[in-house]
Structures are given as structure tokens and as C-alpha cells.
Image (cartoon, rainbow, N blue to C red; front, side, top):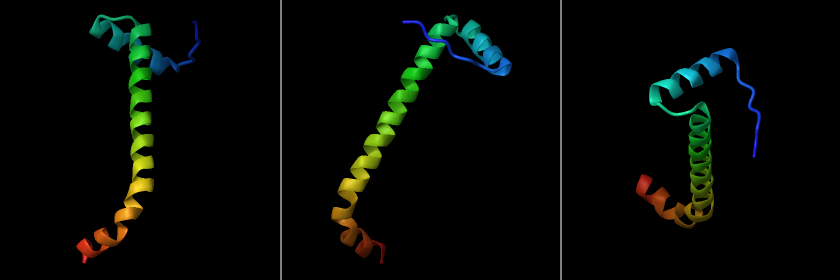
Length: 67
């Protein structure tokens, strides 16, 4: 599947330079960055969900520990 990504001149220069130094294509750099971004976002969403669901169960105990 093809996708067009519009980058500023500076972003394009950084991408090209990094890809060249890394010995991989610009496409591979972008794909790796996307995978990492999605993984971080998914982890953050999971952590937030767990905190919202589980933390209230221990709120009283945590408050007592803080005193």
C-alpha cells in the first residue's frame, strides 16, 4: 500500500541523513518510527487504563501509606 507523507525540508534532510548513516532506506526508517510510535502509544493507553481501573481499589491504603 502506498502512502504519501508530507515533510518539511528540515524533516526530509534529517530523514535522509539518518537513513544514509544507518544504511537503510528512508522508507524503512519511517516504518520503524511508526511501529515504535504505535507501540509507545499502546503501552501508554494500557498503563492509563490500568491506573484508572486498579488504582482506586488501593486509594485508601495508598493514602494511609502517605501519612
